[in-house]
Length: 499
Ligand code: ADP
Ligand code: GLC
Image 1 (cartoon, helix red, strand yellow):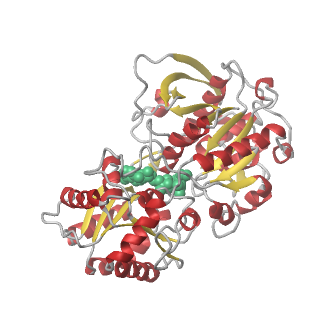
Image 2 (cartoon, rainbow, N blue to C red):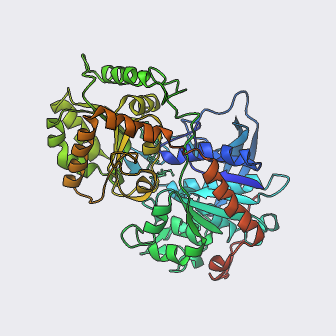
Image 3 (tube, rainbow, N blue to C red):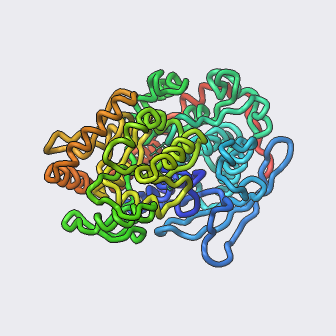
C-alpha cells in the first residue's frame, strides 16, 4: 500500500512531544512490513532541511478569499522513508511550533489549513494517489475535512482512505465560526452533526467525523475517551464512531532509546552488565550541580511538557514532604508558568535535593532516563506516554498514575513480577504513598534489581503495533465506510479553486 503520514511534527525535523517520536518511528516500521511510505511535515524555523540544495515545487492554495503560496521541498530520507517539507515562511518560520511564550499563535487555524491544503495539493502531483493518508491530532484533522468536502468530487482521491490518530484529546483546535470561510470551509459544515461545538468550530471533531477510521494511542485511552470524564465533550461523537475506533499502543524506537547504544549518556549498559548505570547517575548529579553526589540516595527523574495534564498540581501538593525525604528530584521541562515556577521555587529552596532545568534539552532527557532510579509520571490523563516505556529499557522504574497508556504499559510490582508502581486516586496523598512504597522497595537491593530486570526485559518495539495499523489500512482498502461523513448535508460542496 502507498501510505502517507501528514503531521505537524516529527523527529528529526521538529518536536515538542511524543507525537514527533511516533511520526519519526512508525513509518519506518510500516516500511519494514513492505509498504511504500512518505511523510509530509511543515518546515519550521527549527527544521533542518535535507542535505544539499532541496528540490522544491511551488503550490498555490485557495485559502479564504485569496490565495496563499507555499512550496514542497525534498527533506531527504529518514531510514529510507522520503520526507517532504511544506515551506510557507509567513506561517512556519517562527520561534515556536504552535505557541510563543505560552500563548497559541492567533492564526493557528490558517497555518494548519494552509499546511493541510498544501499536503493535498502536493500529493496530487504524484504519479499514483495514496491508498491511505494517516493524519495526527487537530493540526492535520483538516485533511479529512477537506478531502470529504472541498475535494469530494475529485477523482484523484476517490480511492484514498484516511486514518486519523488522536494523540491527545485535550487539544481540539477551537476557533470562532467566522474562521470557516477564511479556511475554505463552507458555512453548512457548522452544524451539531458537523464542526459546531458549543458555538465554536472544532477541528478535531471534524477529523473524527470525516476520517474512515479513528485510532488513539492506547487501548485504555480508547475506552476512556468514550466517557464524560475523559471525553472532553466529544465522548458522544467518539461513541458514535465506536465501531471504527481502536486503541493501538505506541512503540519505542530502540535505535534512539536504548542504554546499550545511546550515544548521549555517560556510559552504556545492558541487562547483563549494569555497571554503566551508576556512572550515568554520578554524571547526571554532577551535571545538575551536586558537588559530591550521594550515589545510594535514589533519584526520581521527571522529563515533561509542563502541562496540567501531567499532574503537576499533585507534585505541588507534596513538594515539601518530598524535600524532607532522602532522595533527589531531577526535573526537566518547560511549559505553563505555574509549573515552571513550582520547580524554580523548590530548586531555590532545596538546591541539594531539587535539581531542575527549565527548557527543552534532548540530551539531558536521555541522561535523566539513564541516570535516575525512578521516573515519575503522575498524569491526570495520559493517552499513551512514552517516557515510562523508555524508562523500562533504562532500568529506571516508572511511578505512574493508573490512567490511559500508563496503566496499559506498566504492571504493579508485587515482589516478583511487575515493572513499576501505580496509584489510582488523583490525590497528593495517593502520590506520596506510592512514592514512599517505591522508596521502601528501593531500600532492598535484591527486590529492586528484580524490578529493574523485569522492566528492561520488556519489548515495546514498533513491529507489533505497526502490524495492527497495517490491518486497519487493509480493511479500509476493501470497504471504506463513509456513512458518517455522507450523512452530513452534501449541500453546497465548495468547489476547489487553485491548483
Ligand atoms: P507528550 O507527548 O504528552 O509530551 P510523551 O511521554 O508521549 O508525552 O512524550 C514526550 C516526549 O517529549 C519524550 O520523548 C520526552 O523525552 C520529550 N520531552 C518532553 N519534554 C522535554 C524537554 N523539556 N526536553 C527534552 N525532551 C522532552
Ligand atoms: C500525546 C500524548 C502522549 C502520547 C503522545 C504520542 O502528546 O499526551 O500520551 O504518548 O501524544 O502518541
